[in-house]
Structures are given as structure tokens and as C-alpha cells.
Image (cartoon, rainbow, N blue to C red; front, top):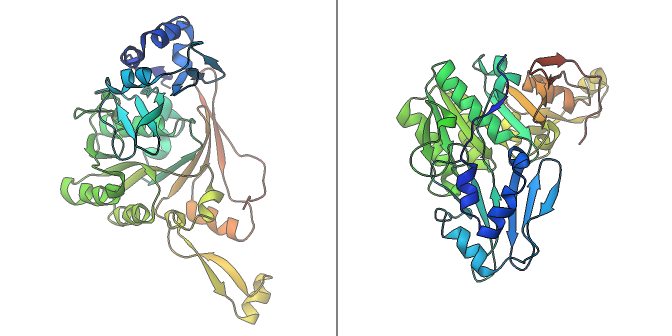
Length: 343
């Protein structure tokens, strides 16, 4: 099995966009470069570097308007989502503005393409089923999504189109980052138009697979259903970190079939041993498989989303498998002990 290997060698470009005193402070601990997640710069506060296991201040000098202007002048223009980047890299610079619209804070997040991360779910991807990835921020959802696009396009030779709303999957600029391999990338003019670009991708470019990051609105959920119903494999992420989150999210519950209240007859209610009004799944789910990303090396897989939702609505434990990546790079698959649904 292919081991994880960081193939991003453009961290230097992000560091060069930093003010000199912050750049030098980051270079003082080069051993930690692979663990660097982001650099935070807020006006009037000390600059801070955040790593996987800890955080540290980079200077005793507070951030000034000049420091922020130094960075913003060296990255691309900010979009409506207040995100910018560095051309042909995966780094993301997000802005915080005051009421006048001036940038007073920056989050400079390191983007990495890592070969081998998809190994933990590669057998699922190869089935052609639609897969939804869930996880908390920083658990590697976008990294896994990017590597999935590359494997589908290069190893499986499928026609893959990435709908890249904030240029986070394929990087900033018009030329996609090599981290997505042969997959094609469609950029989105503004976040509110993501759903339209999803449909455009299917209608105009004949993809076999659509890859989409951060499905978060009702229109995007509807577009995802339309794509799946046309027989196109869909691989995406959504807001939330667990299946139970989607069940109680009225905007996104359609991704897993939706929920409706059903009134049973007296005889049926007695037969089921339930109240007369129960919750049931409304329709087939958009996604066949759901993967909860616990961390970089551990996921929980619901192999049959429809069955899992039905079990949860009945108050029963759904069938799952837990997958671990060991220190040797090998993936282990185990069936966890039952746990109670968390609504």
C-alpha cells in the first residue's frame, strides 16, 4: 500500500508573502514545517503560528496595518467569500474585515497535496458509488477530496470535473495544481452560484465524476441530487462532522434522503410498538456511502446510508466500520461496539 507522502514543495511561496520578521521566525523551526497548519495575523495582536499539536507566538511585535498590507499585496484579489490565494499553490489566505470593509485580520492556511491519503477509502471510491465526507475543520476533508479526484482521474482514468468554489481544491490561478492530476477544474465566480456551476458541469462537460467541496445550501443539495439521479458519481463534503448532524439539519438532510413525519394506523403502530406519529426517511439518499473523518488516520464508514438513516430514525444502532491507518501505513478495518444515536 502506498504510504502517505507530502508532495507540496511550495511552502516557501507562502512564507515569502509574510512580513520579513514573521518569515524569519517561521524559519527558526524548520523541523516543524510539515506540521504547520496556519499563521494568524490580527491587527494589534501578536502573530501566531498554529501547528497540529501546539501553537506559538512568532514575534513580540504586534501586527500593524503595514504588516497586513504586506501580505495582501502579495496574494491574489479577495473574492466575495473573503478568500485569496497564491497562484498554482494550495495555500488559502482568508480575511477579516471591519465595518468599513478594511482588512484587519488574516488567516494564512497551509495547503498540502498528499499522495496516499485516499488509501483508507480507496476500495470504496473504486466501486463508483457516491460518497459524502464529513468531519470537523482541520481533519483533512479537502486534502482527502483532492487526492480522490487525482486517483479517479489518473489511476481509474475517469472523466472527473472538480467544482472549485474557493479554489481550495485545485489552488489559486487559472492553471490547476498538479495535486488533482488529470481532473478538470471549474471555478465559481461567487459562492452563491456554486449550485449552478454544478449543473453546468454535468450538462456541458460529460463527466463521470463530479467532485465538490462544502455543500452547504438547499440549492446545492438539490443540485447534488440532480447530478446523482443522472448516474454521475458524486464525491463531496458537507458542513457537519457526523451523520446525526445531517439528520437534524433541515437544509442538508436531503443529502441522506430527508425526514418526514408519518402518522400510522392503530394496527401498524401496535405492530411496530411505536407511537402513531413516527419519523421516516422521505426519499432515497443522494449519497450511497458516508465517511466520518475522525482524524488524518481514522474514519468511520456507513456503507449503506439509506439503511443507516432508517436504523437511526428507529432508535437503533446503524452498521458501521471503523478504519485505522497504522504506523506501517497499512489500513485496518474493524467493526466497533454499538453506540447510542446522538440527536
